[in-house]
Every structure is written in C-alpha cells, then in structure tokens.
Image (cartoon, rainbow, N blue to C red):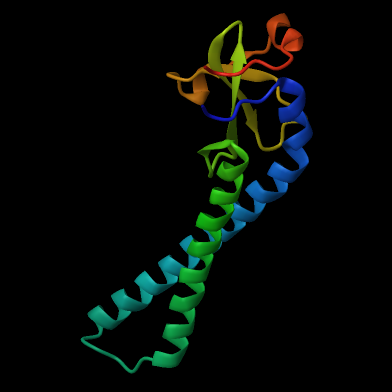
Amino acid sequence: MSKTFTLGEAQTLLPVLEALLKRARIAALRGVELELEMQRLSHRIFLSGGMHVDVAAAARRRAERDKAGQETKDTIAEIEAIGVRVQDLEGGVLDFPCVVEGRAVLLCWTLGEDAISHWHEESEPAEQRRPLDGRFGRVERERLN
C-alpha cells in the first residue's frame, strides 16, 4: 500500500516541499552549468590539438558538478520518502497520491502556486490536470487497499 494524502495533509506539507523542491532545482541547475563548462573545456582541448590544462582546477569543477548532481538526487529522494512524486523537476511539479471516491488520483501542485488547486488521473500527464471540485473537500482519510 502506497502513501496517500488528503487535500489538507498535502496543503500542510507545501512549505517544506517547496523548500526541498527549490533546493533540488538549484542543485540541478548548478550541475548543468558545471557540465556545460566541462564540455566547453573538452571542446577547446580537442580543437587546439591539446593544450595546457590546470588539472587541479578541472578536477575541482568536476567534483563540484558531481556534488551538485548528488545533492539533486538526495533532495528528490527526500521528497519521495515523504510519499510525494516529483513529476517534473525543471517545471517544479509535484504529485500527491490521493484516494477520492475509492479511486486513486494525483493532487497536482506547481511551484509558484499558492495552494493545491488541481488534480489528474494517475495515467495522465500533469498537463492534463483539472481544477479540484467538491469531492476533494469531502475527503477525510481514504486508503488504497
């Protein structure tokens, strides 16, 4: 049985999850920037037929890139350990498993939104999300069997 959330529980978690999501996004962006820097260096070395490289500096940058990648993975794992799915890190989309009228669905929140106001079926992408309706306010505590 997987973790499910009521709308109220999911809303309560938003401040913590928003901070974690922002941390993961910053680390991922830093990793991408460092990877591009390493690719540009490799390209310059290739085009020049070899050049003097500050190996220690390049190794530090590579270690920074690896650290940023690990921080991204660890932070995503922390979010998922709570029971929330990172649907789209770059877009800042989180999904909260929920049971409504005996059916498993996903509450959907995007970074920048004040509250959870949408949902979608598990088989649908977040782009097909729909506004919450009255059924979600009545949900107290339903669990998947």
